[in-house]
Length: 288
Image (cartoon, rainbow, N blue to C red):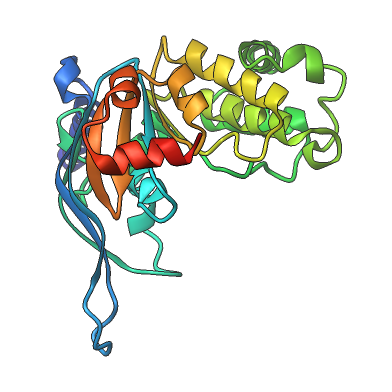
């Protein structure tokens, strides 16, 4: 009996330690990169050196603000975004990555092997460029995520389904099509908002958006932008975008990347009106 109590005690200690990972309330502790460098591993048999993809990244992100990452194609924007989810370090299908430095979230390095991935998945939502929905009905796409939170009461599930769709501006558009398959009835813009709705169910503190409107028409883009502005009251949002007008409209701060390095970062309006480097000035001019 004593041994069983010991095991129970150890389990409770582990659960408490997971909770404590996110107990910090200091704004400066929310998320920051510390001397972070990312390399692709070419392999022992290759004569090539490891390629540097991101170099000496030092960034800090505050709560409840919108940040934009801009730069030319191949600058490392999506890699910077995906490194915050730790996902690129888990997959060895395409490439292996090496890194040095830290990504500190709530006082803990997420790149540490001891960092619990299940907590990271709950706290950080990631929306890719192309909507990724389950091969289920619109209703089941949302209910699946709700059940993953441990919710099973039918009345509560339906109530929360309606609430999340209203929050994302989808209820009036979809309430009569909930039992149809998304690929048959939704526009790309609606599918993207449905992905955001599903991500919000886990109540993330950080939402990552990788070019979420690149394939959308102006009307759908406007709806996504309105949603981003509304959501920023409750969470931090980091968006990769090639649309400078979108960045100027939604982002509080902007990071300009080129060749895997931060060239400039700061308040969005200041960067666009008074760029300090010719690289950023040329990039802005090339977009207009």
